[in-house]
Image: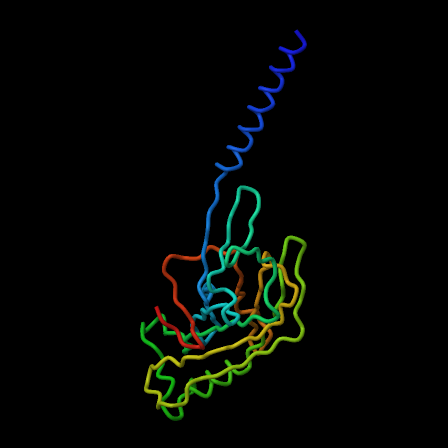
Length: 225
């Protein structure tokens, strides 16, 4: 009698373990493979006079190329070449690029002629505004924000052409951010402030965000579809 009861319990336990294994195997998983540049969603830049959009990409040499994010039911993990990866490299770069111009006149429905000599909204105004932009960076996780102090920002605008009336002036911003020991589950939050101190935009860069099927790539400061 005891032997039969023990046999029944053994069969029941084996069945439970088998079901648990099958459930774990069948749990939903989603794999996302990254390219060398991880896109950063575009954000509008707007003041009472100037308008535009900036978008960009996160990169770190070849670190992100072939990196795979595996989304499980209650967790996420990262692998590259079948090996687990848990942290960012020692430094990451964020490139932001976009065209900035005086906002169009809603009443007239036309753009301001901002490159005409003597015009109050000349390229010098755009350049002065863009050069005056200030940036902050912070790593974000479930526990809050950790500000980044020692990061660098390089600003540039092409100077190899003469700008015509109503041209939009393209600008590029390159940020170098230290990331030694930062978990891959953290997000890099970059905020942009006008020279006046007003907050203009917030960009979130990382490998937890959804990657669109079609996105603009920013490669070495140049955008392409």
